[in-house]
Image (cartoon, rainbow, N blue to C red; front, side):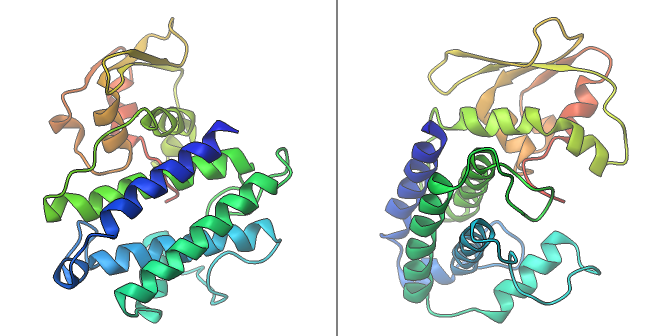
Length: 244
C-alpha cells in the first residue's frame, strides 16, 4: 500500500539527517519545548514501539495510569523515564520503525488498532505516524538550521488534517458546522484539492503551510493561507494532526 511506502520514505529522509548530527547537535534544544534533539527521537522510538505493541494486541505505552495526564504530559514523562545516549536512541528508533512498518503492513486492513486516541485502521495509523515523523523532523531541523525539504508525501498529512476536522472541532468542544474544501497547492505547484468542491467554507494556499498549521508548527495568521465562507477560519484554527 502506498502509505506504508511513504512512511518508510519519510523515516529514511529523517534518518539521513540524524546520521550526520554531531554530539552537540544531539544535545541541542529542539523546537519541542523541554526536549533535546535526542529526546524527540526517543519519543518517536517509543511511539513506534507502541505501534508494534498495538498490532500485537498489547497496551500502547507505559502501563502507568495516565487518566490524570494530558497526552503531552504522558509523553513527556515517558521520555524522561528512558533518556539514554544518542547512539542508543538512534539504534532503538531504527529497530522500532522497521518493526512498526512491518507490523502495519501485515495487520488486517479493516481491523482498527488501539492508539492514543480512537482506534485506527492500519493505513490511517501509518498516516498519523508519517505526520508525526514529519512534524518532529521539523522540530529537529529548524532549530539546527538544517534543510528538510517538503515532498509530495505531505499530501498524506494534508488529507489527515482535513479528515480529522470533526475530531479537531470536538477537541475544541465544538460541533463541526459543515463541510470544508481545501484548495491547496503541492510543493511542485500542482493542485491538491481535498474535500467537497461545492463547500461554502474554503481554505486556500500552500499545502506545506496547511500541514504546518495542522501540526501546530505555524500560526494560521503567519501561514499565508486564505479562508472564505462561514467557518473556514475556525476550521483552520482548530485543525490538528495528532491526538489531544
